[in-house]
Image 1 (cartoon, one colour):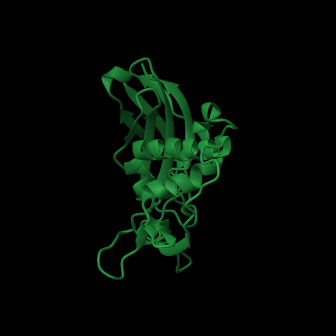
Image 2: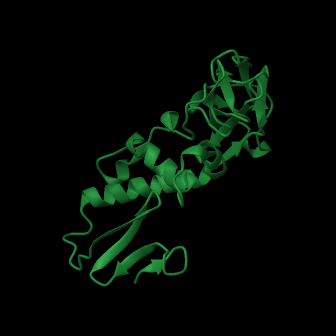
Image 3: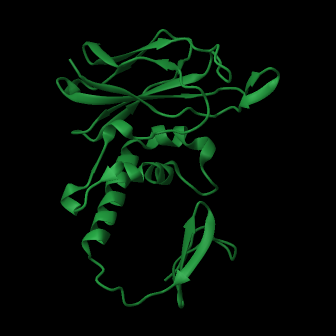
Length: 225
C-alpha cells in the first residue's frame, strides 16, 4: 500500500498504488508497473546489490553529520545527505558474491563541490589520543578565503564510529582532533573537506557561494597512541 511522504493530496506516493508502484528519486515522483511475480527474487546479483546498499547505508549513518554538511549545497529537494552518500559511493563497493562485498575506505566521498580544498597534509598521531593534520594557508587560490571552514573526519572501522571535528579555518597551521580513550592502539582513517562561509569572489565575480564545499581528501590511516 502506498504512503504519502508529504501529507495532503500533492504529496509523493511511495509503494504499491493499484497496478503501479510509486517511488521518488531526487525529489521527483516516478511510477512503474507492479509485478506480483518476481522471478527468482534471491539471485546472487540481487543479493549482492542489496548487500551493497546495506553496507553503504550503514556507513552513511556513521558519517551522517559530516555528509549532511558535505553534500548540503548539492542535495535536491527532499534528498538527504545519506542518499547522496550512497549514490556517490556505490561505484566504490566491489564484490561478486554477498560475502565478498567490501568498500574501499580510502576512496569514500563525504562531500562534493567546486571549492578549492584547504592545504591539508598527511594525518599524524604523535600525541596521545590525538590526530593532527598539518595545514598550509592557500587562501590565495581563486575562490578560496582564509576564513573558509575546514572539517576533519576521523573514522574507526572496528567501533563503527566517526568523529567530525569542530571547524578550523583555512589559515590555521594545524587541525587537531581528540578521540575517545578506548581508541588507544586502534587504527583510524582520516578525511578532510572545506566549506565556504561567505561568497568568494575573483576579479569581481562570485566564484563560490556561501556553503559550497570542496571534494573530500583522504589524509591517511594512523594508529592512535
